[in-house]
Amino acid sequence: MGQILIRQLDDAAIARLKLRAKERKISVEALAREVLCKAAELSVEEKLQLANSMRAKFAAAMVPGAVQTEGVDLIREDRDR
Image 1 (cartoon, rainbow, N blue to C red):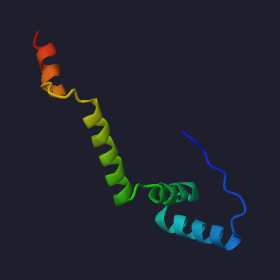
Image 2: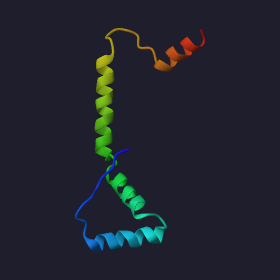
Image 3: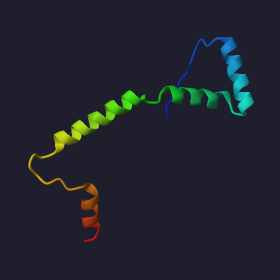
Image 4: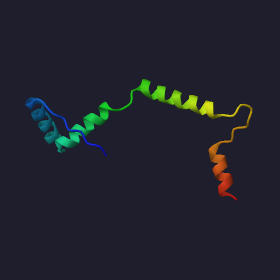
């Protein structure tokens, strides 16, 4: 896992973070991690864009006119041999 060093935080902001962390009985690091992870979540628009991109790649990989077999069926067929 990566690490981030954040410099030049306002002393008042650090004090508020410490207070909030203490109220929740977690460390300042854990509180900061939660905030950063929430800020890094994909938006609905980004999720839709990613899904559309994956659909386009899937469609481009299909062979025109060929029967497309579901992956789960291929796995079961191989397993049952």
